[in-house]
Image (cartoon, rainbow, N blue to C red; front, side, top):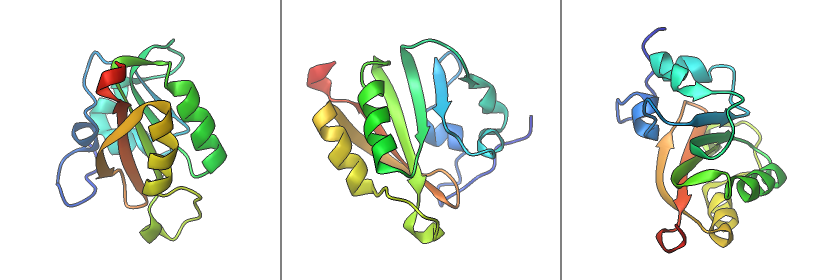
Length: 137
């Protein structure tokens, strides 16, 4: 597998920005076709068809209803120290989306999630990292 494609100002590979590590039970939900290329050799960490609970979930969506349904379901399907990355089109991409950083927060807080990091996933996709609030773990 090739080296990962680098996006954003940090100069770090996507897997490093996301905290994706070997040995994690990790899945991606509705990833764009380029996702494995973005991750490079670390794309092998992402699995399909593995049962919950997961340590790492990367959700790609641009629909509010999908965001609400997925986050509600994922809340009980990640490990207590797990993470959910929610990725949606950046405003600067000019691509259609119903999702903003603020909408992700409004949706995740009542479910017991808190956001702790944001990153450029690609030129078109932004990502917000969610974890379960400490007092609920």
